[in-house]
Image (cartoon, rainbow, N blue to C red; front, side, top):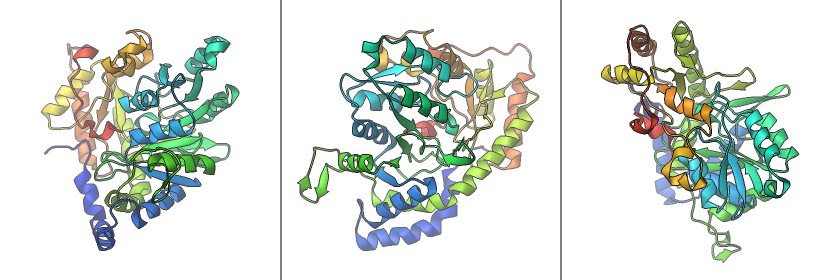
Length: 401
């Protein structure tokens, strides 16, 4: 039988009664944009994250773009991020009129490299450094970036810190003696509720989280036509609103998120134990963070052979992401070349995402690992193919922002 990369049908069965109840209230009120469901979700997600404000928007890309605009980023500015992520991270920067600047990743975690960031900032002449306005680290695969250190660097260089937490719903970071949620340490945290996310809607959705009330007000204005009241508009904002049906689904799923994330961690631990004798290295989870395992990613020079074997056994898998952003045609104008970010390029060439969702059972995990082991114990298997010839990822719905 097929092993699903993401099993949304199983999720929906768990929440069906709660969603049906909330949908009835949506239809009874005929309030399909904004209203009670959206306000309740914003409040409940803020409580989940332990932040003062959550502003719901239309999607994760809008969350990033509007957060940057609210922080004053615009034409002539530069924003530092990583090339190993989904296109939305860089696209949101471009859409403000600013220019993305890339720094490489830590090869063990896939997240922004602290030495690479510091080296980049310190190498800039003072006149060029003034153009850099913000840092956008990505909590890749649901694994938190080193956000405490990044916050220190942001403060040192007087930069805004925007967390791309679009894959990190419920991931945690140690700060001092406590664990806090990813997306709550920087000036703002941005989330996507694309269906395949750990907290996914039945369509598009997104949110911005912040503890800054003034910033929250600017985000709210930008996301809803600059509206002060129904026909009073302070600025020309955008139409980026979460609809009530998506909010109802998200409220139901939010009640299950901690349970589902804990199940993902149990599955990840099983994968790690079973894979430990094999030459297939999982992404490292440092001791000061707790991943929510949006994806479970392994690295192998025989990635393509493993992928083909899994697909032949009807085990869905994915490649996230086969082409780093600095080599994407859409960003060619930035002038980067192959070899500029070797850690990102190596990760793109060698990573494979195994099935990961809270409804995987032990036999499915074992069957997946046995298939990986079959490839890695065979002689004369071809090594990974060329990056530019990589085919689209199976199950890639989980990666869109």
